[in-house]
Image 1 (cartoon, rainbow, N blue to C red):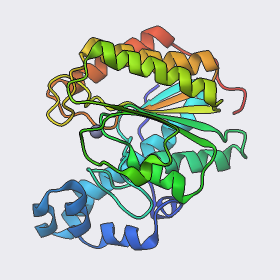
Image 2 (image 1 turned 135 degrees about the vertical axis):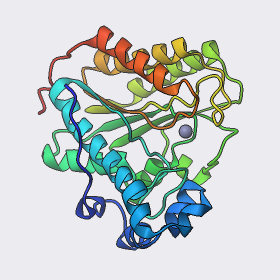
Image 3 (image 1 turned 90 degrees about the vertical axis):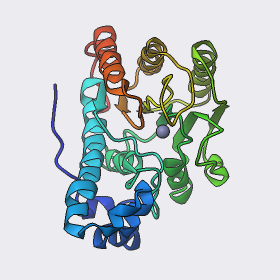
Image 4 (image 1 turned 30 degrees about the horizontal axis):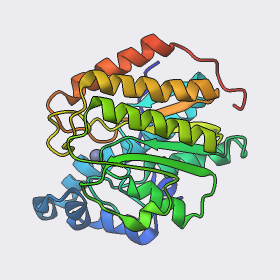
Length: 278
Ligand SMILES: [Zn+2]
């Protein structure tokens, strides 16, 4: 089933983000120019910046919120966007304006009356996921377990955020299929032996792909599909729903690879039994 999200309201965003931060991204393009590292954005009329940049970011958030709810209903779900893992309650960065994962998780916990509380966030975007990690510290969220497998040679080098990561798996520039999948296999085994989640949140960045201009890793399209399968299989074996968001991916063939990976997941997992916790 394909569902189109609307956009997250300011009231929804306030659940995680400070009013001061929200004002800064709403009142002009200056803050958004910093977050996107495109200085010309600050020179555009704010009405254009809001419509063409800030509003789509709020749709990404709404997509993750919607997808997390659908994962409970259908066993698994994918937001064709989202995964803005560099944003936290009072700051954005790396093209990420809002922390969609934390927003979605907090809402989900409230709406399920706490039946869904413990979440495992598996972050496989090539960059360290510092935004949700910082928010885990900010909200003192002991019920969020974070596994992060990333290229440690790349920005953001956020040592403060690392304190929130339970399973920290730094890799190096040039990491290829065999090493990457072995690290993931070990990480998944560790994570599921240390923590029993009610839901898995999967940040499935494809900037690990060979040829990605930002990622600097050498993971093949087939290994990306295998990676997704391993994560879905781990959630399936644990008997919990999984929600995936696309996060980063900057290679020319990223969209095609994502499409094939999703087809593979659909073929492999079909419809899983809905969660009894809905
Ligand atoms: Zn990334």
